[in-house]
Picture 1 (tube, rainbow, N blue to C red):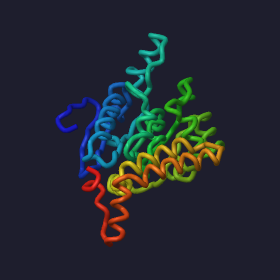
Picture 2 (picture 1 turned 90 degrees about the vertical axis):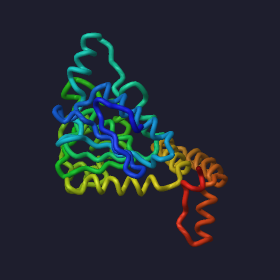
Picture 3 (picture 1 turned 60 degrees about the vertical axis):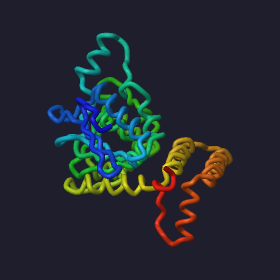
Length: 265
């Protein structure tokens, strides 16, 4: 990723934690197809890079992402009569759910796609200055990016229904109360707290992380407990054979910290 130039995002790798900052601060980082494609590209490349452990997504300036850029997205679709890909060029949800850990640090307004794009992520931390809204209904639209599933998973049927059917905007503390975000912190501590979460997740064995995320995705609303256990046992049997597991066992016996990067490269 070093040397790549992006128009709508900033990218920084801090000792394995890649921070992606949506970077249209004059528009409160309003989302465009180009921005989505650039974010996808960084995450796709980072997932292939052994020097990347996890991703952190935030916004430049005082906003996180104030929703889709109306001129870029809605106007083009109303003229053509065709709905474009809301998430850039590929499948955003599948990318995030199959990715190395992804943490969202919501530093301001997260509206519409600004909110729905973070719902599949592994941890959402918000500043006390954050405002969140699933306001598609106010535009005569419906939620996307599987948010009608992830909102229910995070908030429950009642709270998710209220958020989607009213289009109301809520503050960070209410978002924490209903489960929309996982943690709330002061603005000055937001990035440091988010990095800690990303690093704590990303330092774990990559193959095990991938399998755990897959199990969470597949079993999130699976009612067949036999199938849930079957998937777990299959993944567990594969993990037993990995160099990562063997390194963890050796480190335990030798009373030292495991070095997964050294022993799985």
